Image (cartoon, rainbow, N blue to C red; front, side, top):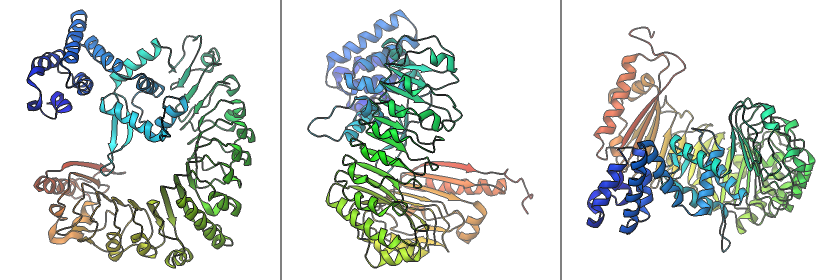
Length: 593
């Protein structure tokens, strides 16, 4: 079933002239799912060619005649690898830079491919979009595994490589001298092209390496406190120390000497200051300091980085006043405009190539100049939308003054606003404004005050696809009309009643519901755990997280059984999963007072 579904959709659609070859190839896979996945993904791109099927069939036969099932598996992976175009082989081999079982952010991976020069665009194609195409081609060939696929955009939140495939890639990488991975003390290597530090390697081992030609340096481990001197890495194009919290300012003091650097990722490190020499890195294209809250400002020299296309900082970082000089910027986040200068906000509107912008609207600490900054910000956002701005993310922590500003139409309904996160204030202050946002797709309510009427207004947002409530709601929530296009709902106010009426959310595919069993049951009264799930016509996936601290086993089992019964009784038979979350043990019998 796995084999034929991947290639033809089902066994019945397999052409008669390929039946014999199919049976023989399947037999030679020895029932190994990974082998079947790999070989079917390879054959899917040649499903009309009997000659190619016979070649693969014969090749596996030769391999099996020589060695074991493991060698046959390796040979199948080898066939899949050499069937790739050269540019995809380099992209795939680059995954050996990441540790075993590591969850890889697809955006981070694509950005590193771009900086390595693996992505070659024609006719002004967008490099990031082309890189994503490469990634999903490798996923379709079952060489990369997608993790946590979104229901409404069908994009993977993470990706990783199966251990067996990674072993094969590591072998090929070593054979081709593509990448050097250090997990501990090791023998000296004559010339290192790419270096990945993933273990407890000692400083002496690293000092013996010839790093003069190294193009990439990646380091892993939150406790890491050692990094080779950047003065030895004058050919470096990529420096990625994301997550190495033990690394600090002293480790990047010589960064101005990396004159070939294209990609810098210092997110989740202990770095609090960057040297002004960073402005000398004329080829730098990508810089990520998005989770460095102690990095309070970037040097003014950063504005000299004329090739910088992506700049990510934390909401607590001040950026250079002359941001308008950085005309190549396509992506900028996650900035708090009210921490920036008026010159910065004016220069923001000059970024004619900006396509993606993320801002935190929080005026608490800037009461004196906040009104001027709001006007400057809105003026610049309107200019950016007339240029190329396509994706605008706004995170709101609202005051009443902000509400007046928005309610009086001083913040226009920009078409580029795709995602909003609401952190504090009253949601009713901006619900009418949000209804006018024709391209708003994602709304995340993580704080503030909201009631039933707010939910009803949110249901009128025309193109909302994903809604997350992770904050308690006043009173019961009953969903009937509205939400015509919503595909994914996460509901985390676990003490609040949620009920779906007939006709609710007709396109909802994924429901994530968080509950506390006793609070939930008492809120529903005689209905018990019935939330009206049967009214969600398009439901395909249900996941329930049960907070079970202080809950009796009987109540926990009743809650889990009720939700499972609802899912099983649904005519679509949606996939069902349940997770228990508890900081304390579950109470037995009558222990609960």
